[in-house]
Each structure stands twice: as C-alpha cells, then as structure tokens.
Image 1 (cartoon, one colour):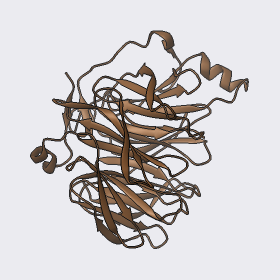
Image 2 (cartoon, rainbow, N blue to C red; image 1 turned 180 degrees about the vertical axis):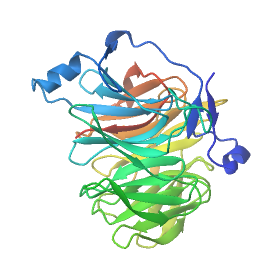
Image 3 (cartoon, rainbow, N blue to C red; image 1 turned 45 degrees about the horizontal axis):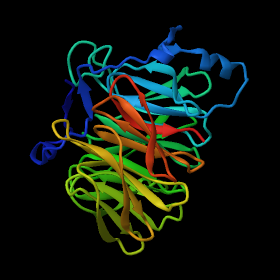
Image 4 (cartoon, helix red, strand yellow; image 1 turned 45 degrees about the vertical axis):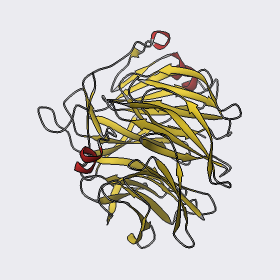
Length: 368
C-alpha cells in the first residue's frame, strides 16, 4: 500500500491526504509501451524516433509521478511515449506557453524514488526543465523547501514555483534560469494559476483559508482573499474577472468576483484537489480525491455562468490532477490511488478511456 505524507498539520486534523510526497510502490505494467533504455535519465520508445525524424507533429500530455518520474503520453492514442526518471518525487508539471519546455517540481526523497524527506541519497528541492522535442534535461534550478506547483507566465518570461514549507514563491527568469525573486505568501502555498496578462499569480494557501494575490510586476503580495477551508488549487478566467479555488476542507469550489472579492461556494465531491477552467471559460472541472483510506473517484463539472454543478463524472480512485485539451474536447484526470489517467469526452461528460501510468500520477499538463 502506498503511504502518503501530508504537507501540513492542518491536514492531519482534517484527515486529508493530498500527497505532497509518497513512498512505497503500486506500479502497474505498461505492456503496450515497454520502454527501451537510452543514455541519461530518459527511457525512449518508437514515438520519440518518429518525432525526431519530423514525421508527425504530435500532441502530448505529461504526468508528474510521485515515485520519481515524468510520463510523456501521446494524446492521439494515449500511449506512453517516454518515461523521464527524476531524482526525488515529481509533484507537478506544466508545459511552457511556447510548447518547447516541460517544467516540473521535484521534492527531495530517497535515491531512486521520491520516498519522503531525509535519508541516504537526498537531493535538493528544485524545479527541472526538459525539452518537449528531445526529452533532454535543459536545467535544474534550486528553489525553496517542498516545492509544490510550477506555472509559467503566458509571456514566457517567468516560471513561478510555490514553496510549501517556506511560505514563499520562487520566481525563475526563463532567460537565465535564475531565481530572481522570492515572494512571501500565506501559509502553505500550493496550487495556483497566473492571469492571462502575466501580471498576477493567484496562490492557494493550504495552511490557511486564503488565496495570495502576487503582483508579478512589483514582485510583492498585493492582498489575501479569504476563500474557505484548505484551498488546494486556483483557476482564473481569461478576462481576469473570476477566480476559483478548490476547498478541500469544505468539499466545495469557491467562486470569487475579483472586482469585489465576493465569494460564492458550490458543493462538489469529497476532498477536492485540483480545479481547471476550460478553454472557453465556460466550465470548471474539479477533481475529487478524498483520502487514501476513503478515496473519491469523480470529477465535478461546474457551469461558471450558472454557478452550479451540472455533472458528476465517475473517474478512478483518488482523482487529483486535471487539465482540458486545447481543442476543448477532452479532460485528462490523474487517479493517484490506482495509477491511472482518465480521459473524459467533454460533450458526453463521461470517461472514454483509462490508461495505466506507473509511479503515482499527480500533476498533469498538455501541449498546445
């Protein structure tokens, strides 16, 4: 059985496990995509060869796997193309706006697998950047303690990383790969999104009931918005008018009018983790994780105009990461407690495929 460590004492009180780190093994076989070994930390299949030869332009989605890897998956047939091994526990991933890089946060852990803090083989907390085209490591950047999520600004200038144990966010200049600023946040910063104009980051503070609004021009916290108990992740509409935050401690989604900071709450499933707003700002998809002892297995669909749940989609145990496809046709959800990814048809609001992913998939992102 996989043992998950909580990030804050508050989650011990709430009985919530959001899997900041993990240990043990629940790996499953991927018979159709058995990797071939290549030099470095990358395992490669035929899909990489076709891409390198320029035969096709392929869309990929990536999962951060807490046991120490990143999976690269072909969105056309949902086959695992590459497994990138990392030193530590991969918690979150995001594709850069230009589609050239994949960034990930890596938490220190036991050598070979991200098995927690301390012990032989411990590595520094860092953000890592890989080439989408070649899967090669481009850069490692040391950040703060227990890095949680990583998000690129839309203009590609920065990558921002939340440091869960330090109550800060590291701002990485993407030209130099240097941390140029460290910004104070609320307690336990975790998931977040950045406005489409690249000016503000909205960071969910898991250790308190707020969202920090970070000005990325002044590199300072502008304010904190009280949203509800244990916010895990945020989303913001492209017009910058509406903020959403998943409230793990209330089984709800907070919807915030950013002009007034007025908050409305919409009931969702048990133990919501990540939330993602689709390409048309029409729906918010909330992955309901629950706990390892009592896992949830659904995604709640919220109509943002009506401000109500319109569907509950059955997925897999421990639904955590969620993202929608650029063409607005699919939703991809990681199921942590069964090592799978659910692929949802948005029009039908149902799962049309489920694939196995080794190593406890957590965060997820997709190329344009």
